[in-house]
Image (cartoon, rainbow, N blue to C red):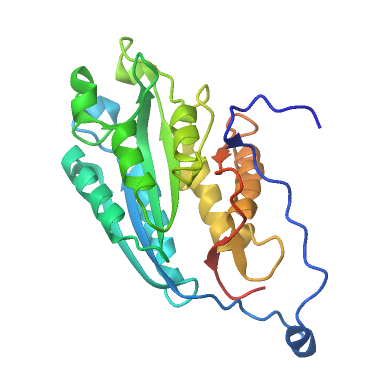
Length: 288
């Protein structure tokens, strides 16, 4: 296989997981798979989606719905993969810089060693002149970007500070003709993802696209391409082994294939995984 040009720490979707040799004896006897059994941990989620900005010309179609749909989907994991699901959902006018920062601090403080913390963000993202990534909350002022947006430092503080498993889903786009010619239209999360996925931080980052691509949304899909694929994967599409779980490697592979199909090759999700991190399940459900 030729060498990838993806930056260190960033991985393209993992190879298709190899199915197990056969079902457990009890399942084989019954003729149906046995639902998985896990040590019950807690899941903490912060989901942020901004479709409507204070500056109306910045507004998007589906970012708020993307965050809401992801948040609602994970409720079904209570009693399956996790003993409880606690979350903070912030959309549109509720997704101010102050409220997002408060939610990130809640996520950092709440997630214990046996728990999982997830951050989902959808909306506009961009890089400043030095390449630093910023997520744009509802009340962003592009003339005061560092003081009105959510920067790399805030995201790193929250996610790297989690005591349990940590992951981030980034479905942000850029639009130069909307945000203005004086602002970088690059939506490159590679540096942030590399930093978060470093061994000392240990965060898995699922990004909707590479920096040179736009994250595509369509009313006909009901979501952005990345979130549509993410929901499909987490509801069973990425359960390649048909054993009732979706792992982070399986999800990464599924996202790459599904988003490519939806967008006809115009969008390529990228996953950053800390070196040496083993595969583990993200969600569980009754096996098919």
